[in-house]
Image 1 (cartoon, helix red, strand yellow):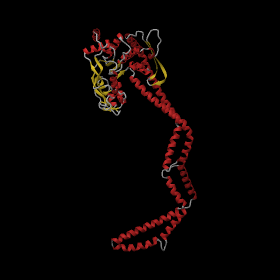
Image 2 (cartoon, helix red, strand yellow):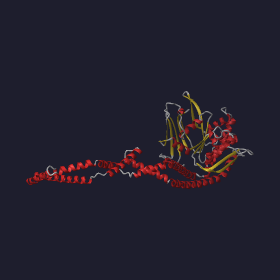
Image 3 (cartoon, one colour):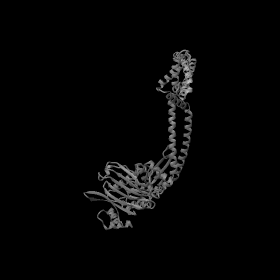
Image 4 (cartoon, one colour):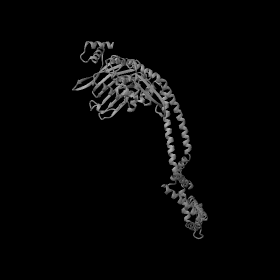
Length: 550
């Protein structure tokens, strides 16, 4: 419940701090005194967007803070889901800075307006005059029926299943579109893939082929140079090996005269072995190197194929060609298997559709079960509120389409008098009748929805006398299980409150301020008497006021 409200620098309010209790609280005041300002300030801590024009002093920030006692309302899960510190006494604060920026806090943790609004909807149901138009709104009508039907868990499951169904529907649609486009590209992609596959692409193959091409195209020069090298090493008179052989003999004779000579001999022996091995390798390479025009043509053809593929696909590396080949393979494979994929997705969609239909049928059944009771309760309560001939026609018809809340089309019509046709509520009901219908519906819903606080803003507009007295009794009855606020102009309603606050204006410091105070028993008598007979208090008005309070 709302236990405290503090407002600073908002519209005509300089500073205001009020505490509220359980039960039924009535708020009265002359027209223009600022009751709507109070409600506007409260709406800011419930998540409404801020307006810089609401700052009383444009150079100071506006601060609105409210305290709610929420121990009995099962909100700990909401707090944990939104990374908020849970407190049985939760404080919500809203700040509007002179710069126009707005900040919101829940238990001193900064939050977005979306989070604030979601929590606000769980704390207070504010009914203002224009909300009577909701009576003709199909979504609101479903909400009334579903409150009695107790289908919250069933609706949550349906909503999640509908989400999956729509996701699968979109996936199937994308597959069908892909198939339509892929068929056009399939032949060309297959041709490109075949070209790349026939090239037998491997990492490093381009470098190997280029090296092989260089060798084959210069084979005569290579053979000539190999022979020259071999001659220089093996010539009988001036060959390197012949000269090294003589040097080896010299070093061998010196090796016995000390370690330095032995080391020198080892080095010369090593050079001789290395040169002899080189001579053998030169001979071996010369024997292996032959002119092979056919192989040269083959290597050249492979190189030209790779160069052409690189140019065709606009890449420089074989690795990039391999990547393109893999992508083409996936496209071609996906196209060739698209029928099977589409068939599988269709089966998945059919299964989800069946589950949705089953859930929608259960939701519809529960709604149908409570409609007679809802009609009876509304008509009985309206009878007490001076509408004995009020009748409702509530019908459900199965729709072909899945809707956010099931597969039902709802017909919710009203007739105020005998012999009149049923029609749209907002078209056939007067303002006073709309107020009574809305109060009736809210009082019924209050039994089924665990809502901490409900606030009525002049819901009694358009009614008077005994009917207003009964409306006050209904709100008082509701207040036994929840906190109820009523902003009212009617003394019959105000007299039913456990607590009575008055909103008033006062001239202060060269300006007009709005303030609010809780009335004592004697002050309530005066306030009710003024509401009954005006500022000139008569004894009869005072007596009537005392009678109302008693």
